[in-house]
Image (cartoon, rainbow, N blue to C red; front, side):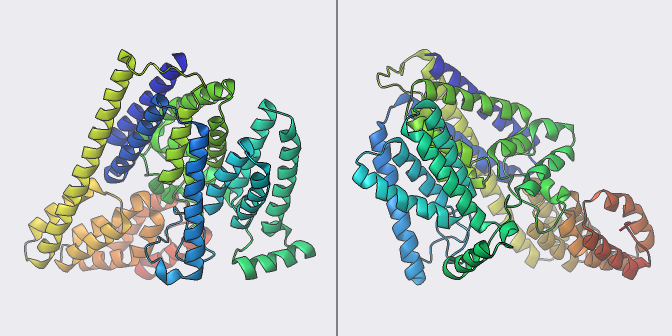
Length: 495
């Protein structure tokens, strides 16, 4: 009973803290409310999985069928791309519209390989299948998949020992060799350089830095967190809202991530330290009992948990759904007798259903409200009433306060009505969480202020303190000073 009780309580407290973070401290409630609904569904998957045991052989068969379908889709798309226009170009998908682009097929293959390592079945099938799938992991250039596989094998070696020790050493060596081939810093080596040329020509994959800029991404999270006022530093910026403090504090325009690429850092910066504590506690309970019961599902859970530490695969619904499903399965033993009808279980299911309903209704309400306001704004933009236009924009700002494209669009509508003060205010708002975007529109903003007969020199003197707090690069500082020189013959920031 204890493993069911403690895992359920910890995940419910985690979900409650997510709810508080979203509803009370979110920067963009529309973005956060959708993710809160997803998190509620993921927890629901865990609770269902905790109640109903699925033999590992069934999971193995299901994941293989899914993987085969994805691979066939990928091959078909490579051969006949015009037949698959529905495939997204988003990097959150397994298959992309452009051949050779960034995808997560290798991370999915890592799950299949882990399943084969845990439960090989017939060696006549397992050995060639493992070699083929490991090859797919290699050419996908997914370091997070390599990490997940090696950590899984390490766990298998510690728990089951025997042949896994030799297999772990073999895979570790092969992983190091493959990663070395892809590493930019080793291009000086003639052999690796020639292999990289083949890789670029045949696989359309360019070499990457050894750490794939994670040495920049991870410290960026701490900078973003440190920039927050007290309430956001304790309870986060809201799920999905890391993009705002990241844009504000990024040290480089090209290397400003919109995701932390680490599930623990993501929970920490978006939902707060308390939420992170309960998520870690939940994972520890699953790991402890799964390893103690020697449940095969725990090793796939370990693979995904390791994978989630270096990539944003945790934002892909398929991966995170499998993660929570396996968390529930890991707590079962072969002779599981689950207290499905206890008062505790009934209360837990009722709370979960309530969470899903509330979060789903919140998301639906905000989504429909924004859609309705957008429609009214389109109509108002064609009329002559400035008051209605301003009122609608103010209402929309409450729902999506810091979207670049929307702020610029709203500003243009106000400018067309000659409401220059409102147009300027909306452009200035870009600087609150995205100073790089703001820099692009600053020249136009100053032109609007000239029409308002604002003393530009005094205004820029006033903004100097703000400019000095932004993490502009030396090039961006030079661009800012050029704008200030053209507008008021002065520098706005020291280079």
